[in-house]
Image (cartoon, rainbow, N blue to C red; front, top):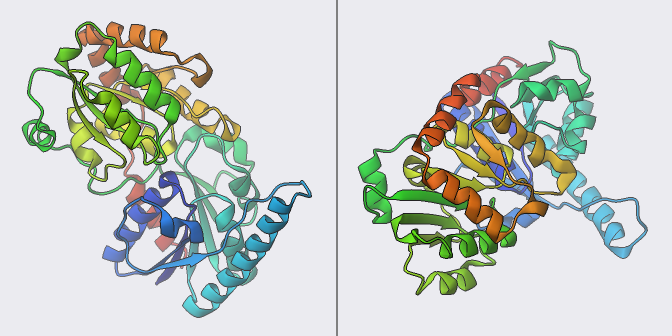
Length: 359
């Protein structure tokens, strides 16, 4: 069986796509991943075999030169996608969202190839809302998503969000050794998404640096590439025990020791927090149609996380929230147990089974 997988360029799109590809390869399928050309310069690390790249452009309704360029690149990518479809001859085309996948799924529909899309977020993006009408199956990470899609109940399937196979619980002592951390201290993981977040980087550092008992903390901070150098200079001389990364592929070590996570609320992050049952302070990305806020509310509603809006985020407020958690092991344990309210799904296996059933 030949399966073409199309993804956007963000980690939230790529990681679920790669998880599916590596699972299906073990089932004997022939796989090809297609990504936007700009992904070639990405620092996101993954290993999934054959990859093709196509041009991509951002579209809007303006008459600006930037939009004209975006339309040209989109059409160029569509032509490249058509050549890939003709050459690879897939039995199924699977899309993981973003505008970059639309042309490939359209060609699949036009040539009567079976098609599947996976929506990672609670609120579907524009691309997947359009494609949901055309494709054979729509897989969703959250049950709430079905109400946004307006497709028949037999077409939409709750699978959860596939995560990387290496993201499994690591022995605590092994994970502490990975970071050269000590037992008995409070471990905070800070992550602003695959591209990093300047605001989260700045506010979390200021808050932690001003804590009176910061010597009892151990910090794993994933800053993204833009802020890494400046943030590293800020950390030095603060008396903090920390490990700073621009990107950390081996997230299983960080998740395995974290007592509290401060992060954005991308769909992949939500799935990973659920996998490790981690208490979290979620700071949703405030743009992109408030997708992340809806994701974050899922965990807040069951008591597994607290949401702090990006507009309300400042050093004093975050410091107060951190102090509340540092002194409250009972609250943290209650947040961990709250994850039991969510369904436990083998997302990769469920999605793979649906894809394989379409031949």
